[in-house]
Length: 438
Image 1 (cartoon, helix red, strand yellow):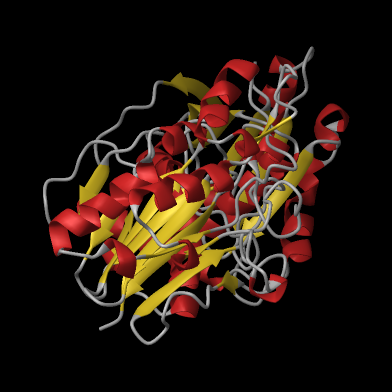
Image 2 (cartoon, one colour):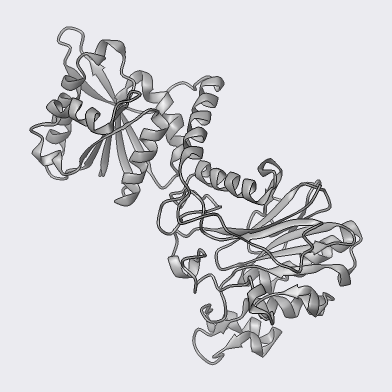
C-alpha cells in the first residue's frame, strides 16, 4: 500500500504553467478518491524562485489546496531552488515518519530525470512507482495514468549535471551534532603517518541512528552513498587526506588481506600498503578498527576485527602481510585498537564464548552463563603478542594514562560513537584510517 505521494510540479512544461492551480486541484482530487480507506502523506514539490520565501509559494498554491480536508493533515508543499534540495527535503519528511513506499506523479518529460535523482538520493529501502501527469488536448483537464518506469537512458552529460547539483547541495548543508572530531594515538608517529579514528559528529546524516558522520552506505539502510561520500569529503578535509585515494576494506568477517597495487580480492578485512598518500580504512560499529604502522620500513595497514575475524586472526594476518610484502620487522610494527564494544557490554552465546576462553580464560566474563561477556580487545592483544608484536607497541584500553585512551566502548557512549549492539540493524559506522605522508 502506498504510504506517501510525491507530486512533482518543479519544472512543468510551458503549456501547463498557467494552469498550475487546476493541475494540483485535479491531482489531489484523484488521490483523495483513490485513498478513501488509507490516506497517504502528500508532498507537492515546486520551484522556489530567487528571493521568494517558502511561505509565499505555499500561499500561491493555497487556492488549489482548499477543500481537501481528508488530505490536509498529511499535505505539505516543499519549495526549493533545485530539484536536489526539494527531493532531499521530501526524503527527510519520509524518514521522519519511517515511510518507504512512494508514488511519484510527474510530467512525462521529468520521469527519466527524476529516476536519476532518486537513484542517487535513496537506497533500496524505498520503493517507488510512477504515474504520468498528462493533459487531454480538447479539454485541458488532468489525466493521471499508470506508467511502468523504464524510459530511455539520459545522456551522460545530463547525469553529470544532476550529480553536480546534488553534490553542491549536500556540500552546502550544515554539520550536525557539533564539529567533526578525530581521535589520534600518540603511539603512531605523526611526522610519518596521518591517522585517526572518527566519531559520530560533524557530518550531514540526519537519521537518529546514523547521525551525523556515518561513513558506510548499505542497501538495507536509509543513508545513500552520496551522503556518505559527503561525510567522507568533510573528514578528508579535516584530516588532510585525498578522498580519491581512499581504500576501505570490504568486510567479510574473515582474515583475507588486500595488498594495494595487487589484484584486489572480492572481500577482505585487512589491507596494507607502502605507497605514500594512499589512505587505508577499516570500519567499526562495535567491531574493532585496527591500525598498523611500521615507521622503519614506512608501511601501514588497517583491519576490521569482529568476533569472527578476531578468532580467525585477521590482525596477525595483516601483520604477516606487512612482513612478507614490505620486509617489516615484527618488533617495529605499532598496533592501535580503535573504539569498539567493550567487555562491559558485549555478549556471545556460550558455544562461541568457548573459543575465546581457549585463547585465554580472562577473555571471557561469567563463562558459565548462557551468554558470557567477551573481551575482543584482550583476545586481539594476546594473539598479536603471541605472533611477535611487542606488548609496548600495542595500544588498547589497557593504557595506563587514560587521557591517552582512544579505545572507548562504542556501546557505552551513544553521544560519541555508533553501535550495532546498541542501535540495531539501522546503525551508523565510524572508521579508523591511516596513510603514509608524502
